[in-house]
Image (cartoon, rainbow over all chains, first blue to last red; front, side, top):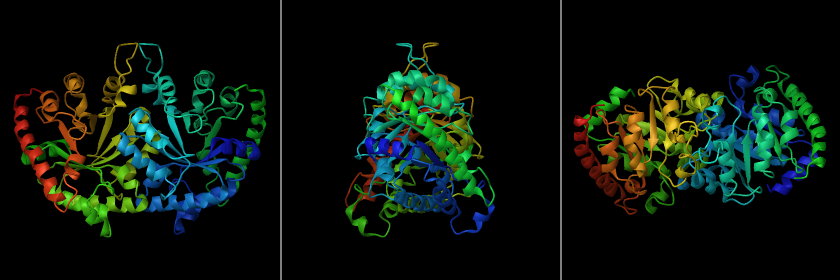
Length: 280
Length: 280
C-alpha cells in the first residue's frame, strides 16, 4: 500500500487504529477451543467485529510460531481473510540479520508470491544498514524500524548517550536510518509510554509514520501521543492488542471488542481534527 | 544440553564446528529440485556428510520462512533428523520483543513439547532485559545474544560510545546482560571479522561460550579467533555455512562438504591444544 493510499483511507474511515492480533490460546474464550482452528476462528470474529473501526492489523508472529506449523497455518488463513477488507497489514516480526538473511525474511513476509504478503514488517536495528535495506526492495512495502520501545527494557540500551554528540542510541537509529529509506517506505516504532519524547522525535523525523504500541494495557495516553506526534497527514498508527482482543473472555468477546474498537475510533475521529492545524 | 555435556562432547569429538544450515533453494544442486522436499533432502545429505566433524547445527530461520509453511515443514524434518546425532542445535532466529511476546518465541523454539525443541536460540538485545529473560526459563536451554556482529552494519550502532563511561554499546550489552543469566545458559554472538576485540571481550566475559560467525565466506580468521577467544573449556562454537554447504553445486556436493568440514575439524583438533594453556 502506498503512503498516499494509506493517508486517504485514514481520513475516509476517520481512524488510525491498528488492531494487534496477539492471539493467545490461554486467553481466548474457552468455547472456541473446541473448533478446528481456534486461533483463526478467534481472529475472524475479531476482524469481523472491528474492521469498520480499524485501518491496520498487526499479527504478532510469536503468538503463531508458539503453536508451531499449525500456528503458521492459522496465520495464513488470517492474512488471506484480511485481504477482502483493504486494510494495511503488518507482520510484527522484529526481524533483522546480515544482508543475505534479511533478504530471505523479506521474501517470507513481503513477497506478493509468498504465503503472507504483508504490507509491512517490524525490524530490529541492532545489526545496522545491511540488515534493514533488503526489506526495502519490494515496491509499496514498508519497514517499521524499532526506535524507542514501550517496555521497561527500553531503558537498558536505547538511552545510551553517544560521547561524540550527546545523541541517544534511539536518536542515532532514527537519524542514521532515515538515510536508508524515505517516508514512503519507512515507519518507526515509538512506544506510547514514551510520550515525553514525541515532540523531539517530530523534529528529527517530521514526516515518517510512527507505529505506536503501549496505549491501553501498557498505560500510554492516546491524547498525549496525538498532541505531539501527529502530522498534517496523521502520521500515526496506534496499536491496541489486549484491550480489544480480551475485552471479554465470554461468548460476547466479539461484541465487547467491537465496542472497544468503536470507542477508540470515535476518539480518533476527533483527534484527526488536530491535523488541520499541523504545518508538517 | 548442559554446559558440561557440551564441553565433554567438544573434547571427545575434537571439534567446535557449528554447521550453519542456511539452505538456499537457488544455491543447492539442481538435481535435488526434483525431489519432494529439496530443502530437507539437501540438509539430510549435509548432516550425514558432516556430523562426525561438527558439534552443533544452526538452521537459519529466514531460509525456511522464505518458503512459507512448506519451509517450516522442512525445518521440522531437519530438527527431527538431527536428534539421532546428539548434537547441539541452535535456532538462528534473532528474536526479541516485549516480555509476553518473547515468552511465546521461547515456547516456539525451545519448548520440549514444541515442533522444534532447539537447544538454543539467537536473540537481539535492542529491547533490553524483559525481551531476553523469557528465553532463560527452560532448563538446559540457551540464549545466544547478539553482541558484536560480523557484518558491515555492525559499525552503525554497536560501537556507539557511552558518554558516561566510554563503553561501547556492544560492551554495555555484554556487561548488562551477563547479570541476566549465567555461563550455563548464555552465549554471545561475536563475529570472527572482529578478531581485534576477542582479547578485550575475554576480560569482560571470561567464561561464556561465544558463537562465532564470519569465518570463511565473510573473511574472519579461525587462528586469530582461537588465539584470543579460547578458554580452558574451549568456549567457542565456530560457525561455517556457505563454505561447507556450497563447497560444490554438483552431484559431489556432500562429498565436498565433508572434505571442508573435515579440514576444519582437523584444524580445530590442533587448536584445542591451546586450551591446556588457558587459566580461565
